[in-house]
Length: 412
Image 1 (tube, helix red, strand yellow):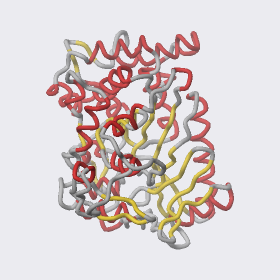
Image 2 (image 1 turned 45 degrees about the vertical axis):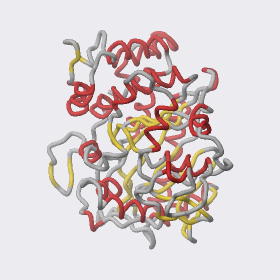
Image 3 (image 1 turned 90 degrees about the vertical axis):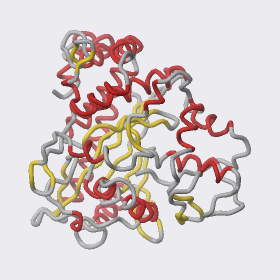
Image 4 (image 1 turned 30 degrees about the vertical axis):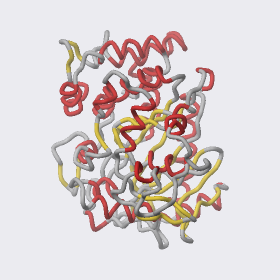
């Protein structure tokens, strides 16, 4: 989960909301790759989830990383809840899953090296205290009461709200993990094309990286139970966003959508103020019940954008959010898959040609059947003209014959 946003003065013009997103526009030479991944920690002898405090705990892992590998601490209310170093950060998911939000890096090789270093550091600390970590999309054996909530004000508010909307919000918070990749765009038009392809093909990524067939000690009937959880979480802030495929899509249209998503909180002086269910539109008028008479800042807007959870999300980059957490090889494969599709114009155009005729019903169906889905009689993962080869053509053009085997590049 995101840490509080910083910087940005008061919002004095409605145009500033879209401008904040538009500031993400970058020339191709400046495009980067950011990888985020979560993993469950457990006690090796009992297989129990790690508590926040204690000899074998999430706190002990964070302290070890801080002291032995020179990560700088991030605290909230006197609790160590994260770390930062070299443009990346380590944070805690609501149920204690450990997340690395990697630095923006130039190549797949660099992001894979970053993953390797992080996992090696975590293992070195964990081995000393009898703790293990596992990459899965959902906790395979734990019950709800087995997993405690981490001491972050944001999570206390979310937990209360999740109990009122949908049926799976608290499950998502405590017992699911994901891996995602964050990629750049050059312009509004480039953002729109990439966003549409990213949303339409998230179900394919979900299917490719499905890794959560067990839950509460049983086979759950799904390849990705995490994806099933997200389908019944909070309809106001999740899903496939049909409006993205309509005429007029751009930064302002996404702003209009985000303004209608109910708020969670406002962050002031190190504390999260309860604004559950309130309207950012009212905030812009100085009429937010949680802070009557106060006007929002750009940091408040940036914070609000982090509380929206569609399958792909816009900030000053695009987040691909549809994949289950997994082992090392898959953590490197996911960014390769999306970079191959979105950072090469020929591959991006080919992907768009494949999905542009789909309607909302077809996209929804694809979200349930993944790469087994078909459009106009063709397979999404056909070895000659489907998504797999389209992604790998980028690597073939860049690296020649070494990039020709798409299974090699995508961890198959």
